[in-house]
Length: 507
Image (tube, rainbow, N blue to C red; front, side, top):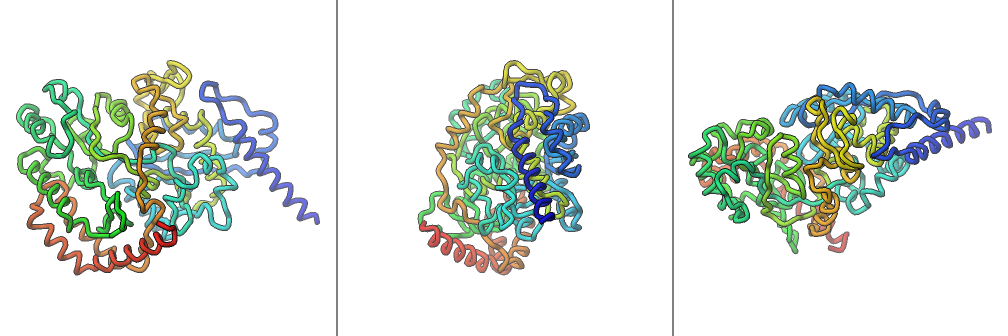
């Protein structure tokens, strides 16, 4: 009986802390409050812990220690935790670091993961991340408000066999591929960007840039950051393994996209641009796309667009971009896996990590502190939710709000449209969901074949998507080697699982 009463007291204390943390979420317009007496009394029920959080971006910010200090003061009386932030550079560095940590079972708490970085599905399947809604039901216990914000349908998109292993960012829920274009060059040469409807429509502009701007690359085309994205396949499974369906597919037929006519047509155009000098000659081996963009050395780049993407990049780089949509907005399972925070299975404090993420997603003060820094230092308020650069913005300016939690409680810069979040809602509302939304491929039965195909992808695709090699010669070679590696077996397994899932879901 004594043990039962003791356990009940501990449970009640935890509930009290969680409700206290949610109830004391700080308004975005107010200074950080001192801890209320009730919070101060409740906090000792939890042992103090330090949480480590790894993510990708522009590298470690100069003032990150000041931000950590403010975070830790704010959350101590709520969840009795402190946080250490570690940002690694865009490109291969983040994947390399995280895969080493995961392989060696290094202890850490939270990490950024996605379909395109620190591969979410691969890591989840091999047990790198904590399941959030299995029989322990951690998501409901420690992050119920975050769950409600995202909604069951969106959460279902990133589930693997019905289990979530990460918390998606609450942001635009669709994608639309198009171009980001450097505005000063558009203005200088009087380009009519409204006339751009296809990749080919860029050619006259690229010719001018090549002739008159010798220090600027006309078109960004790098490994994973190239116009091949404009094909906008609905990818089934791993990004580096062929096997896709059309976004508007009715029969859900899975096929090898490198056998499709439209793939060859696009790759031939990219090859033509490469030979004309519109793409840098070493494009296939460049891993850091951000360097050229930040230096103003790119005229046009293919990007996943959303309302205000050009304004965000303008703020990050300090010069203006404009955007041109090419593909219609679509919601796919991949979009639900485009930006997540996961809890490492090596974490000694997964519950506390989830409590922190709940605060981060629902507390405007904490969210904006991590995104923008300290008021009157890194930013200055223009009005309640509108800000401008502060005197020390250069020392803390992550510029990755899309990656960090709940964007709908983010401040906006005065240069951004004040109705940006309403436009996000409209953008999400216009998007059509793919028929495969919610399906996730289980690769376990063909993992050896996928490993072989991944190696072939690395051998051919970076060179093909940058125009570095002739597609008419090399795509047939690629497909021949894919067949020898087992691509037909992989596609048959994808088709089998997708058909069974569709029948089960009544699609």
